[in-house]
Image (cartoon, rainbow, N blue to C red; front, side, top):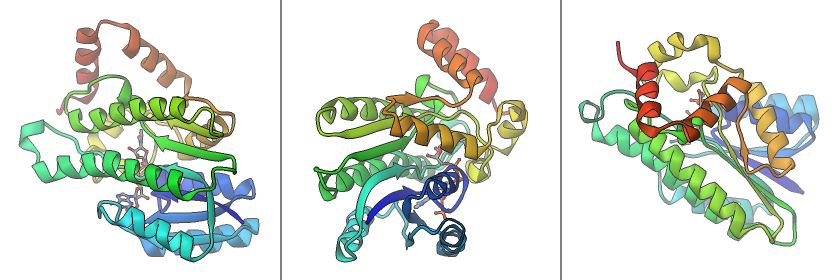
Length: 258
Ligand SMILES: NC(=O)c1ccc[n+]([C@@H]2O[C@H](COP(=O)([O-])OP(=O)(O)OC[C@H]3O[C@@H](n4cnc5c(N)ncnc54)[C@H](OP(=O)(O)O)[C@@H]3O)[C@@H](O)[C@H]2O)c1
């Protein structure tokens, strides 16, 4: 039986992915730290959509955990052919005024943990099976953003990584997609200390279910990069083509602390 593994499935975009996948009849392995939220979601999805849903409570900042997750998958005989590599976090503010530990958590969760998950997945999954890997990146990947310098640098890294990996795997029947959402209504902003920024940009926030649907459609149809929402597409185009000095200063005006 084939499974889709979703990290960060307890809330936000990851939870929306779980719902979208279950609606399409896909069996799921849900990973996050909040075991009770995963259990609630598992009960709901398996009852509503008659799919198999397994949960695995894990802190992806623990460097050994990705290996443990795939060892558990192997012991239980689950076959994972799709990885939604989604768990991530941000931290907002002037770089030197924020705790170094927070910057490093962002770096480790958004980069290390995703790289480790992708590596375990590609080695553990069946190469004779069609496989799918989606990395949740961000429109923050398209330009440096003052006051979110580390977060956007991690997302630029993951965009570059996704595109390179996609090319490496092009003859191995693996679809690789970078999902680049703009602002999305989730719990992301509170732990990131960004409630004020979210309020200022409320008009441009997308719903998580729309983002997840666009991501899954793009992954299944083998798109390299998916940017949900026309205004995010325009923003990403401008960020890639306008002079970088102007782009950074423009980004700063959106994110400048009051
Ligand atoms: N919301 C936006 O505006 C936006 C825009 C662009 C990109 N993104 C990206 O979208 C992805 C999902 O974010 P979201 O907006 O859905 O945020 P969210 O609502 O805060 O969800 C984050 C998910 O990641 C999990 N998570 C966080 N730290 C973890 C850890 N150490 N170990 C395991 N799981 C962990 C959380 O679950 P637990 O707390 O239960 O562990 C939760 O399920 C992230 O990669 C984010 O960078 C978000």
